[in-house]
Amino acid sequence: MSRYLIIGGNSQLGINLAEQLRKQEKSPDIWITNRNSKPHQQKKEIYLDLHKPYLPDYAFEYTFFCAGMTSVAQCEQQPEKARQCNFINTVKLTQALSKAGSKIIFPSSSLVFDGQHARYQPEESPKPMTIYGQYKAVAESEILNLSKKNMVIRLSKILPHDYALFKHWIKQLKMGQSISAFYNLTIAPITMEFACQQIIGLTKKNATGIWHISAKTDISYYDIAQYIADSLHKNKQLVHRESAKDKLVFSPKFSSLDASKTDKKLSNNTPDSWQVIKEIIGRMI
Ligand SMILES: NC(=O)c1ccc[n+]([C@@H]2O[C@H](COP(=O)([O-])OP(=O)(O)OC[C@H]3O[C@@H](n4cnc5c(N)ncnc54)[C@H](OP(=O)(O)O)[C@@H]3O)[C@@H](O)[C@H]2O)c1
Image 1 (cartoon, protein in one colour):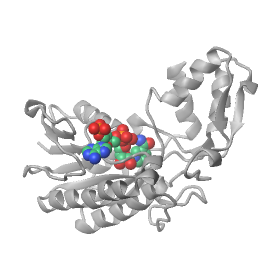
Image 2: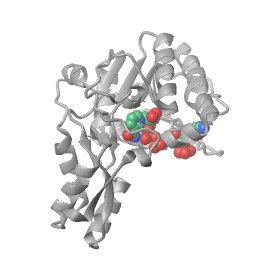
Image 3: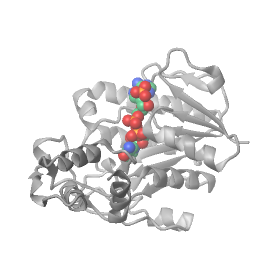
Image 4: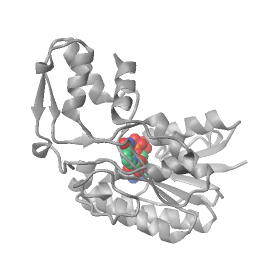
């Protein structure tokens, strides 16, 4: 039986990866790390703070590295903390785990690119525009250099089934109140279930190197908000156009990744972006 380690067991991705593994395998041996100072040994919890990177000497076949500073804004505000957490100590830990024989699966992001065109290929050179993207890109490269069996999986925007922003918009629109949505910020959304299914699929197929998981096309938050208003039979004029440039550190024109290599490997088809939005919104309203 394989032994899995999920670093960042309380991350959205970590929680859902564990859940999917439990659905797919009969009593999988899953260990998680979190920042609980009194970890539950029986629940296979291990204490880990990325600022003091230490892990006990257990052997794991697979490590999903889901912990880190995931807010782009926070990384810009605290660049040294981001460097220590998302690069220096991430690499230190993966080095030790790799040396002990674990395959590292490192979720990365479309933010390693500059967002100037759609459907980035896995082999394109990173050109990060943010501190978050910069440390993702260097960590990717170091982790791949540690062992030929390691894997980097770049993900586009993952939408959980209870995505807070959409919940808020639905609530406002239902009350007849206006909302604002970015017209110049796009996503190529994937569901959490799909992201986990693909990550586990690639892991079980012993994939190595760089892989992409993303919907095919980029759609703007404004277009999504209009779709929500329409689905609720509300006046679309309640949705106001807002510029992301005034609000965000970085607003890429495009964030889609080309996932055709992943689709081919797993013999499946990445869903269309609107199909994903319709599925998520359909469940929420
Ligand atoms: N979600 C997406 O759309 C998306 C897209 C592309 C890539 N990714 C990547 O996928 C991975 C997981 O993303 P996510 O959205 O699931 O993350 P998340 O929900 O924001 O969770 C981040 C996790 O990192 C942990 N963490 C933060 N600082 C830490 C520290 N100093 N020491 C130990 N743990 C620390 C947090 O622990 P606490 O629970 O204790 O706070 C939390 O469990 C990340 O690498 C992210 O960059 C996510």
